[in-house]
Figure 1 (spheres, rainbow, N blue to C red):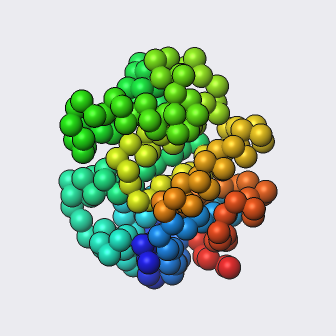
Figure 2 (tube, rainbow, N blue to C red):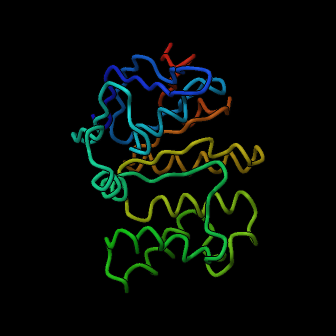
Length: 222
């Protein structure tokens, strides 16, 4: 199994006191599985994704991805690990506005150095073609629709060919037709072997996902 969470707890300290975002979560997700994490706002969906991606650290418990226990890594090692193993997709796209679409997709390759410089542009164009927006390559993000920007964000997440894609409310700012197309892209990635985990409020997802994980107040209920 690719991802294994054991007795995972995350508590945040706030001015009002301690807040338990996740409580005793045990979860295993296989390679190439498309999993939706669902629940109301504040149920712990984003926290779960952040712990799997090494963006945040658990208060207790363990996170293993591909046989690597990531909760004990140093910040530097974790950043290096994340760059090669996890692709992130966000609700608000988070594309750099002063870079072209093509440059946004090339950026993770430049940071990671996984490909020779001469190979990065062709790979970025190939990824943009894969998600259906290659004709937008030389435009700035603001010239694209929300759906097109999310497709670019998915291409960027795939830049270093990570085995895991984490998407936090990736369809939250999209109309229903575009949301369906984006979910279809994720389905295709999972079918090709990439593990995809999305946190979502979408209700009409049963036809594309493999499994739903329901969170209520930080606890997996089914």
